Length: 230
Image (cartoon, rainbow, N blue to C red; front, side, top):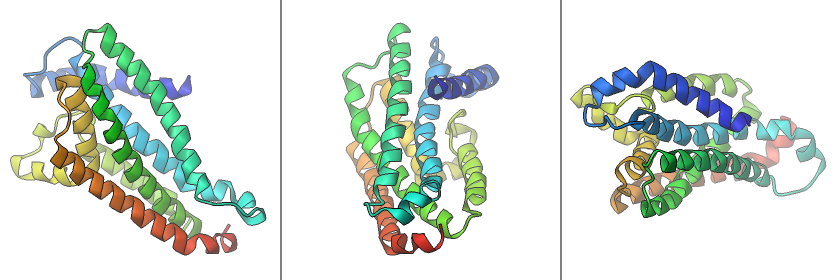
């Protein structure tokens, strides 16, 4: 229930506050429920990343006693976080898809494109979460630093506003923001029924796999030192 209520409350607030703003900034998107769908796609995508990274950040500290007393593959801990986050995401996604069906905006077969999109996002979030989690073991102020970064990143990502509000010269910066790409992919699928182009998806996939590899390398290098800092 709490998994559903938190993003739902956020979507309702953003819809009430920003609907007229979006109506002015997105004149071509004026169908019923269009603003809620636009917001839902952004909130759901960001919520999955946020949950994985936030929970990975503390997963080693929270399971410190088990790490010190038992011998087991410690990579299982962030893997469990991902599985739990995917379960929560599946619940909210199912409700979102039901909303699309009821309002007559269900995209159809193009939904299959969500699967590679989900793989890319999970790989990126897991890699980032592992990096943040390892740093948090050695530097306990990491959680405060991440809260600032997360806040800035949230508002720098067009979750509840269109990227067109930024000056033309700055819009290219959004292409360097992986979350903008992922959110835009989902919006293309559920609003326009257009799957992401293979070129953009492969570019994001390469970045996500790279982030995951960085996380795994850092984890393998420092996991044996966890016991001295937990």
